[in-house]
Image 1 (cartoon, rainbow, N blue to C red):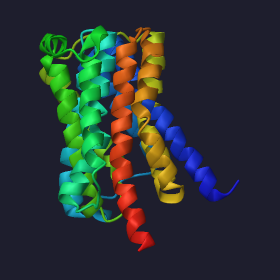
Image 2: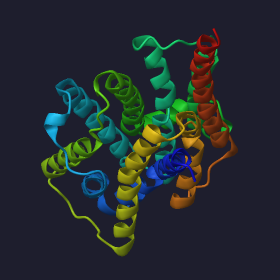
Image 3: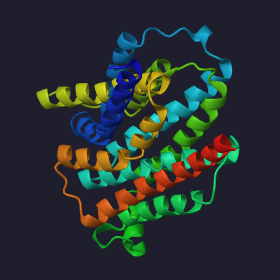
Image 4: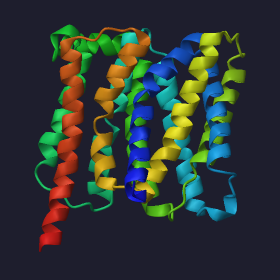
Length: 301
């Protein structure tokens, strides 16, 4: 197998690992509490990254990347883990995860607005389809139901708000770091900072008991592995594999994530939910095609 194909396969493994994150985070939170479970998860993931990627040398990173990258990455991961942990039910955790998966669409829009990424009119239906898809997911059994969606959000505005904020923050992270990272990858350092932030929050809340049962440990190791090795595998794929294939596959993460989460959490999902998830993925793909089409036009010219 060619090195490029092997790297692409490794990158595709990252897509599967990330698709399992919502269900695994929720499972860890159920056993170890939202904050304590997240702190343990990012701590173990940090160890995995130190063993696989290596130690962090701060002098190798641009200062602006360290500052902005740390702030945005840590904030995003806090929003992601706590939004899922604070969900009132398994079904709500999956819905919250779906809101977070607006980030691919937001990232492309941010690249157009701030990085002068060329695009075409496909971006408009793509963006609208993603937003309608989220409304469809949150509307419950009826699909697009404004009253039902508002009732759903009012039930737990913290979780939904954190998930939406996380989608915007990750789009900002991708847009900003693409310009200032200088080809460096600070994910190991960022994970350590996330775990430290969560332990501080855990201690300020007064700690609390964590149920370290066999199931809890298994879910913890799986979640930490999926997060840590997912970032490592994605980095290999992006650097040495077929970026077009990986980018296209990543836009199906919302559907993959819903399927794996429903299986892990034993939470049946309605037809309306799957329709909404497909819209979120479809909208992101349209946004991606909008930028790809423009790039192809420039090459042809």
